[in-house]
Image: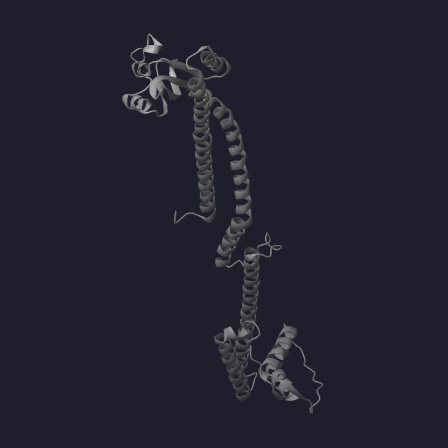
Length: 369
């Protein structure tokens, strides 16, 4: 079960709950209905036996007593047998031709002799089914003078139980259906957002940070907070990736520019078009600039977020422009272009000279191209 998905584990738990509820409901119903109902039937038979025993004690085995026995046999589903010799219940002789069938055992017969009521549940050939039996001793002058034997077919007891079982089965089916529906809602409410996050995390590992978890935006619980944090993380990583790409594109452009100028001025010096000292000076300056760009690459981490450090120092703006333009004059002349300057020599600005120079270079480079 370790390698199961969360959804599989949740459905396994739901299935276990269904099994537990089903077994518990059936067991509880069987106990409460069958056991308690049978106990109620035993109490009923015992009470009727007590009434007949009272009648026997007051009137003896007269016509009224036998009328009560006949009335009990006619009015109820039970069978009531009276015998003047309780030992016959042990021999089975009252129920020919089943004389070999014992309604009570030897130990139960001894209980009758001691004046105790005997309760039994067993198969009986005379009744051709399993019966609930209650044997009640009758005494005359403190002597065992007879016995009443109440028998109730258990099929009559189980029949209401079967009807109740149908209702129980229907109710249990409805409960199981509700559990499944609730389980499905729980899975959709809890497990599905987690599955979406897992899929989004897989895509993020592949470099795609554009996915967002949208199914939990209105939720304020822990799952909603987790989804919101996940979306924030995705957005942050997406911005970092965009800045990284922009940086690489800018640096690639910045690396190509000084290399192309160094190459151009080297060719100019070789062809005698540019004074060697001037050309070497510009090439050296471009090499220094190229070195700074390489250092910028090594400080890539500084460009994430707002951590990029900018210098802030006074700059003679006109002088900076003159120096940059001077480096581009040869390339501009190759394309028959002229650069006209109109600058205020007294202007002093505050900023990062390397970045200001980079801006001017980009403008001139784009204009010449």
